Length: 491
Image (cartoon, rainbow, N blue to C red; front, side, top):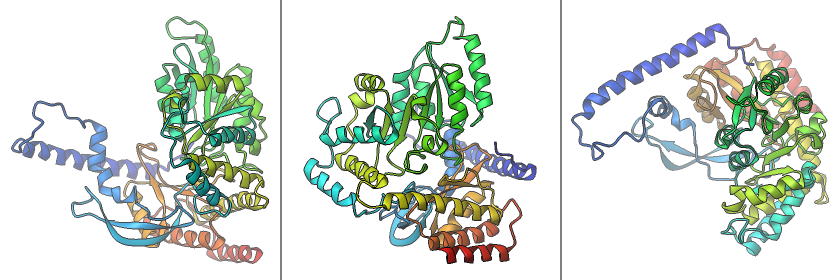
């Protein structure tokens, strides 16, 4: 759990209160002036109404230049960011012809496969010539190629499960699968900080949903015990099935799941384990096989393994891996398999080739080098940020490291100042995070060199001093500089 300093919480609440008050004040005058304006939709209910619309108009639009920045190159360690400008106070943004080359600290390119690769790229081009860019059909119709079959076997072997099924979109993998696995009379117990795709999938399933405290196995056990004792609402009949849903690495916290304890608890109460490895598969573990390998958990103890190909593999789509019976059932019942267009053949080839590189089946040791580099880069960068006095969330080995900003004024200030120094970062605020817990989310890649990381640390340190987000005492500069020299010498 994040403990917010009292003064920080107070000033953050005051800032949001001030923005809310001025927004309401402006909306009051807007209603007055709108009475004299002509409107073609008189008699219709407003299509955009409520706090969400207010938040977008009065808070988000003020800083929307910090989000959705267009790029004009591959998302490698450095990429080209297109400059934009606004003539109406950020209501609309227009692109220019100017391009800035920036250090990329925002993309999920954990192993560096998003850029051109000596092994993957030629094979992807060949698959494009052979199969074209799309199958133009669902998997159940004419959308299954030999590449899709090969990919499913490759993924199943990689994650250590008997079978797998792949989909064209990672988000849909969660939101479409959960309603197929469980329905009315079932119980989903979800981590309080699970991804939105899991939340929407759980809501759409019709099952009863309960939440346990983030990454707290003791509270999970308490919820399981209470729910099993109470049974279904009103009837108190036993639950038809119970599924516990967790993530391998939490994308907004950078924390590793306490999987061994959670698996043990689920075994005790005969609940199924659903593991989302979107950010962990390929990025952690000795051979890139995710948190099960990293934490020493037998994949046979995880009933449903989900992951995406958009992070470590430089492609798109997602997968579900499990028993042969489960995968066969999903192929007969899952709408994402029956009705959605199948994953693009070149994208499928990219995943197959990336897995071969990771496992060393390309005849080189590049995969092992990438895995070692992402681990070293992540731990080095996290350690240096903490020494500077930043409040950094997450665990060692995780390539995701959020830097806490808190105050709404510091969100655009941090983002814009970093961009001025050609460092592109992602800032995250409500509704993606709780209102008081705005942050900058740094994503480290194996393609980053030590010089890249040192430049990023220098810029972030300067901007941190300027914006005022170093919430802890920093180590003496001499010690930091000496350690930096020692590290460079070792390299």
